[in-house]
Length: 521
Image (cartoon, rainbow, N blue to C red; front, side, top):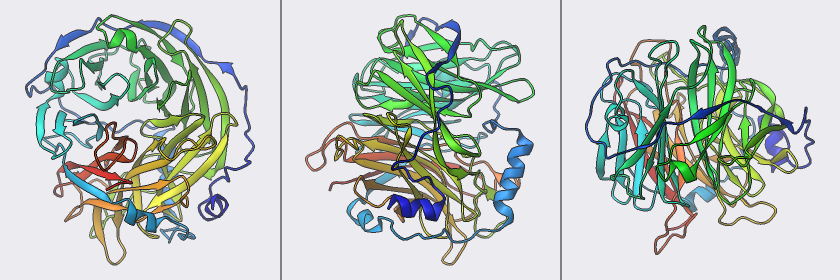
């Protein structure tokens, strides 16, 4: 089925694909050792607001002009049906249904898009979004237990805080949150980290911060968050004062220090300019953590290997270019009843990968048949080649975008340790019967056909989204899927996931929807 998928969607055939490494094993340079502030213990409450509220799209790693040209080229031939939509696992969807959903945080005022992200823990779901900040929900009934603005949570209001991320560390039962603020001036830009002191996110957190040691006027943007056994893994894009992409950074924060309220330092690695790099959430005790980048348009993915992050011998090296069939940026998503479009991003991996054994899983949105289409890749980190790949979409002619994926080891084998995949994405339909933007979810077993078609619907907007009158409206900029770390009487660990994605409340307002789905009752 992988071969058929490759032919229909322009994807590389993973089995037997030969890697084309360049300077394989070449060490990445660490330019500085950076000191994180000593953590302070707080139990934040309140809804303080920053002095200035503003929004900015994530900066592209190619010029804005080039991105606009690629977007125009993706659109100019018009949308068509995706070629060969057969072979999907629609039947599997009936056995892997939605198991309920509830309202997440919504837009309080002026910021868009929400940068929707969240994570599931033992008894709670934590969501972080721009503007509304930090929310803690009872994961069983969706009741909101706590909501704190970022200005109150981090104790900082000089500039607006944005680009939030949150993960639950199931090994140590801690919540980890990151965010950044807009620069105060040419040399000061605050980056924040928060770690809970227990599995209860309504209780105190340890808060730390640092200023990225970049050139005056440089901007630290789109940080991502990952985890391995010993470290919190961070990546970020760096732009100069003219918004030119100049480098990607990566580093590891030692859990032993961060989780115990001890001041720590880290090596600040310069990965060059591969595009936006996604860190992994490592499910096992692998000593190596693999980072991956998808450039806006390319015929390969860039794979990096990190070793010993959070320890004195930490190192990162470029491993290989993983070949895929050429792809390009997706067109913006269409909406019924308006010429206003929704942003579908620039082919980047917008959230962390799942790493289990020697397999790495992530998803991005590309152009297929003139339609924005999420495509997942599973990479064998031993052979630097694809194990599998597939597309995720609602229908043959729907617009699908803003996707995220997480993998589970349940049902995995020695040769393929990722036995379950869970997805979320956004979808619109301008062909009859039309519908406005939806929050979608779906999944597949390792033995299923590669394409995920149809899926569950957690929310459907009643009208189009057009808050500014701009030709393309901001959407996303990301979503999240996390695996439930606790079992129930009817669902074992690893068989259920929680998703969160942006939903639309009105023509001018966004909200979010949190959903459950699983291979269980």
